[in-house]
Image (cartoon, rainbow, N blue to C red; front, side):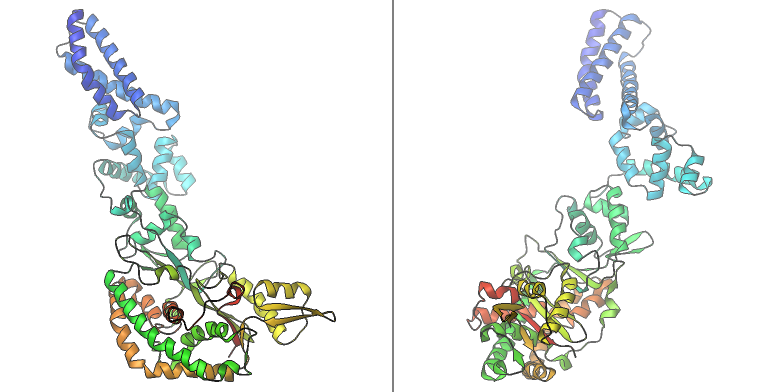
Length: 542
């Protein structure tokens, strides 16, 4: 072919060839280099040959082959994939270069391999990437040779199907949820609380993706837009510790996730506002007008206001037990976890487009009621926005030592200087100095000395709850029904267990009660010195 004719053919195809390479190369530089190589080789071929019937078809064939060589070059540079084998895996009856052009790009192959099952993925990587023989793979995985061959055959089919399929990705891919509150009802284990298992956005979104409907690893990956390789190990970990349930190849969440709708938030606010207004105000007035704050069975070297900060939530949580309809036990719904924990895990989500429940920011700082006991005493406390933060993953271990030392202290048994200092640092006692070689101190928390005093205090709350029993039932009925209707079927019993405690040892109810009294000015805010021991009691263990 004449030089001028060859130049015209090449110039006419240069832009389409560049577009072709640009879509299939890893970067612009590679595309430019490959385009230059194709055009140069094609120009030379046209110059020396006169038997090319269709120059354009000839050049595109060269382009396809050049692209195949490009992929082979990447493999030899250390990418670890034999593209001849990989492409053949996907299609045995199509031209290699044409298949590359149509849909067998390297990135899509990686994506499709990620969606294979765990065992298939191991076999494919070993066979096609690590160049291991089938017999060697069978020995390493401790499976029959026929199983390896069968999985390779199935993988070929699944890869081809995966390469030809566009996956539907849910909103979680670009708008992941975040847990704003994480907690538990029950005991922690050696691995700590719920937040220790859901530190990453990935783990939180995995649980959320399977909260209402069971999903396979691949389906979860589709929802999150993440490779199944990462989902797989995280899901296995969450399943091991009981936060997910696996049935065959599908996972389902085993924790409660609150994402209150506007209607549920409204019902919650109406319910707790009215109940707290009725209960908290009457309880406060009853305690003030009684002689209980001066009872010999109640010990605390703090003002009455401080004592009320402890008594009001304690009485609110423990009064009216005979009115509570407890048809579901904790053992029926709690999860026993491998680290020794036995609990019901929960988390909350707030939608940016939905209003937060009333006092939600205060609930972020709330923990409790928490109680730990030994043979003699129960240590009971609540953490809140008004107190220091005392409850963490190590609190239960610390509480055991606290109870042991408090028992000796309250029984007037001698303590070492270090033990006195420890109790002072924990906020349980206040140092009054040293006299005649003996440490003088005063109790900083509320001590209900005997069960008779405790029963008299609880009786005040009992009378109020009995008075408003029907009203409380009427208030909570629509809220309970709305929450149960919004809870997935497999978690409704777990949810129903917690709903039994509304207006009893219910953190939201206690918070609303305290807010009612603080906002009305009946309860004065604690001083800085009081925050360490606020809302803490020690009572006889029944």
